[in-house]
Image (cartoon, rainbow, N blue to C red):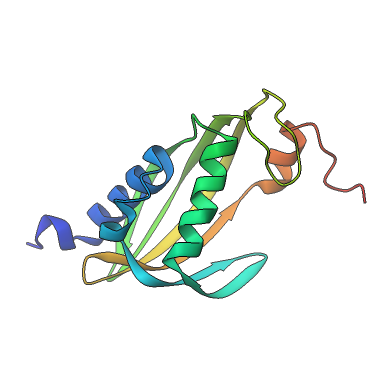
Length: 142
């Protein structure tokens, strides 16, 4: 049986808690490798952990009560996929949108690659279109 800290599903669970639910920038060093590889529909490539920390801080400033509840984790080898609901209240500037006080509730799907007990590569796809609508913006308008 794998040691708890090296079990990819446990590492993915810790990633969700530390990064998205707690926004714990200091503890992220224990959960993620210094150099990340990141993939989403708009970006693909290497990302230093320091840049990802700034990204996470931006989300937590905009949505201080941000929470990601995971429906299921599925692991195969060093890859773990998981999906669930992200919720929060828009209380800070986000993507040029001043605070609205609106609640967001959107689905997201993630995959992480775990190497030596840390997340080293991430794929993410969230309903940003729906989130912008929930913030009162029409994503289709120029």
